[in-house]
Length: 416
Image (cartoon, rainbow, N blue to C red; front, side, top):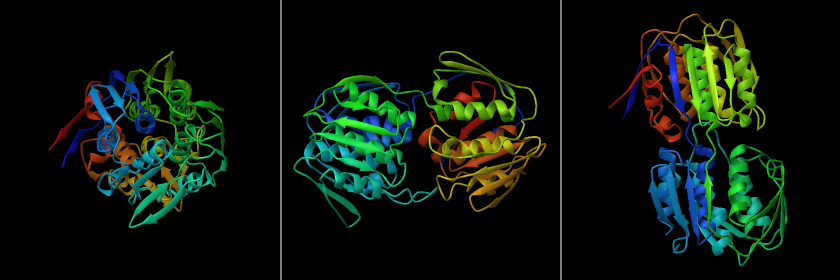
C-alpha cells in the first residue's frame, strides 16, 4: 500500500496546473449512456474514481476510448443494464448510472452503494424522484430494480438538497415525456456543468444554475463535445497548502468565479491573491489568521474544503471554530492532526481549534479523500518527517498531488 513521506518546513514556489473536476467528470461520463452518438470529452482528470467509472460503464457495453485527458464514449451497443456490487461498493457515484439507463432503456439494476466513511449519504431521494417520474422500483438482495415503459414528466420536490440526486433525476428527465420540474435542486458548479453538456446533446433545460430546473423531455439525445470544468476543490486545496506552508505559487486552468466562498476565507487568513481570467497567484509570508466557518450547500462554504481549512487553522495565530452541517462523520482527520501536535477539540458537529506555532511530523493515517489532503497540508507546515498512510483515498480525487507539490518545492515522495 502506497504512502507519502513528507519533510515539512519548505516554502512553496512555482506553478501548478489544475485538473478537471472529479465531481463534474463522474456524472458527465454517465451521460454517455443517454445517447447512441459519440460523446467527446476533454479535461478529464487522471483519477482512480474516473478509472473505476470507465470500467463500470465499459461493462454495460458503452465503448470507451481514452487518450490522456480526452475520453470518447459511444453508447450504440449497450447490452448490460446493470451496475454490480463489486464496482459500486468502491465508489458511491456509481448510482449515477440508474437514471440514464432507466430513461433510455426502460430498466436498470443497480447495487445499493456500500457504507461511506464520512456519512450515510442515502439514495432515497433518487428513488423517490424516479418513482414520481413513473418508474416501478423494488429493492431486493441489495439491488435497486427499476422498470418503466416510458418516464413521464412531473414536478419533483426533494426533501433535501442532494447533488447526485439532482444529477440522476436531471439526466432521467431529459428523455421523459413532457415537462419535469426539479425543485430544491442542487446549484453546485458540477451540476451546472452536467446541465450544459446535456443541452449540447440536445436536451431542453431552463433554470441552469438555480434551484429550480425545468426540463422539456426530448425523444433522443445526440453526441456532443465538452470540456470538463476545472476542479475548484483541487485549486482551493493547493491555496490552503501555500497558506499553511508559506510561499508564492501560481495556479493555472482555474475557475475563480465558482470559488467565492473559499477565496473569501483565504483572504481573511492573510493569503495575498492576484486573480486573472484562468489563473491565481497566491503569496503567504506570515502566520495565518484563524477563520471560523460553517459548511453548507453551494454557494456557501463547501464541505469538501472543511478539513483542508482546518489544517491551516491548526497553525494560525489564534482560535477558530468549524461547524460541519453536511456529513455527520467528517471530523475523522482531527485525531490524526492532533498526533502532529494540533490542538483541536470536538463537540458534536463543531470543532474548536487553537492554533499552535509549530506542528511536529509523525506517522498519520488518512481516513477519506479530503482528510488525506488535509494531512498533506498539515505535514507541509510541520517540522520534521510525516508519513501519511492509506493514500489510496487521495488518489481517488487528486491527480498526482505529490508530483504537483514536488514541482513547487515540497519535499514529498510516494513510497511503496
